[in-house]
View 1 (cartoon, rainbow, N blue to C red):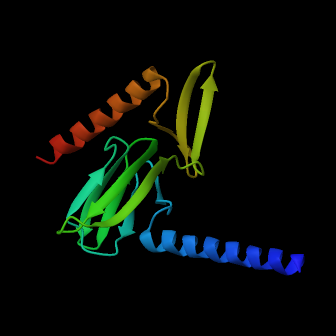
View 2 (view 1 turned 135 degrees about the horizontal axis):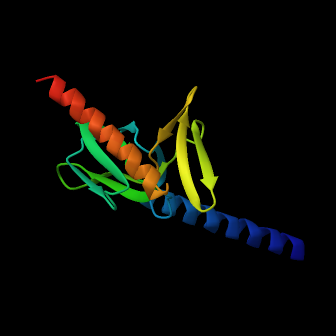
Length: 159
């Protein structure tokens, strides 16, 4: 008799728990935001479930988002970190809410440490200096100067 009573109580509690879970799922509460991973200095296409009208980025220094067409965004990684992205339709209704994480392309990047100084190289297949956040400023500035000079030369020759 006691076993039957305990069994009925367990089934009743399980039913209540399942019902509460269904209510949470139906209301959208408790759902985790979907993550979008983007490599720094690269773009990624994100498909939407509706037509985008407004894009809201928590920290535009980490990532940029542009409407490619009404149902697709282009997300570009600008700096390491995580931020949130909210997309609204023309009525102001939320059609997407995601966490955007920008990370390094570890498969090709080689980091050289000289004491506390750090330099980065992009190795695919041979290693070339690469500007990366956190590199020693002298290396970063020297490479930036060389790149800027090269761009200026190519632009002046085209005129």
